[in-house]
Length: 348
Image (cartoon, rainbow, N blue to C red; front, side, top):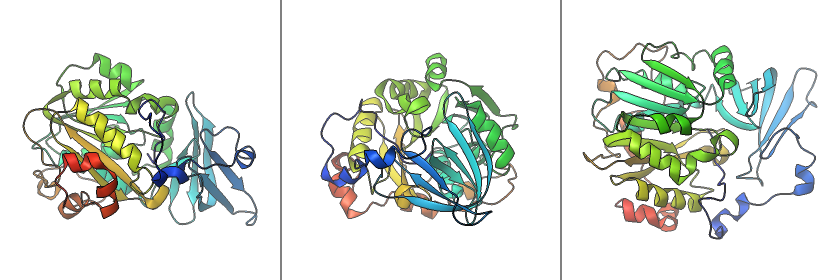
């Protein structure tokens, strides 16, 4: 759920200077790091007292920077068929979920990601009824979808059952809607699932992957996006996690270019702040299929006006209609560096 690394299949040209820092590395230093974590490294240094540790997360997309969180207690550490899974209680962010050494969520700031990746697309269309979640094994997107009483059917396709099980145990306020009768859980490969999905079934598809290496590698490639477009109804929407504007404007450019080939409706880039993600920000790419026009900037289905929405354990913490519109406001350097945004969105 944090910044993603290009697998080389989408990006053939040289990486521009704006992202050179994301490619820097020190092989000798990396060789000393946690051997089971790929990509990058994870180091746990026990030098802050008997019951205290400090954890350093090194993201391969930003290898010249490190974010450290002090650990109170390691709650779970294990390996699935696909990745290493770690959960620890932090000193200031609550419980933290880490996959292959990269932070996926923390209890303190997960709302900024989960609420925005869900409500930005669902509040942009009238009365969504059928929603597909790709990834999202922590259950946060399911929790947010359940606020929409118009939704009658939710498919979630998560490849790693261990992520689901661990989330239910250690993040019970996040993984709270797996037993919602509207939810249909599919543990398996999302590509295979979409190959068999009926055309035009979904009103919205939310892609909430881990980094696109290993089990998530195919989720940023053209064949997968073609299957997404096929599974959406006319005027249906895709929301895909889409890099940090501070680190990866060249990758944002590539993603938008590919999506413009696949989707003939609107395309929009928005962003939110997540303190524990690289650069403290993450972006979302929104696409709609040809059909009824979709305005991703001005919500037509405000969540505050949803009558009869399922009762939640807590109110919204981050998303509101003002944040919805504000998330599409882009800094000047992004407008200059991402030409495909200028071609797609009317930027001042």
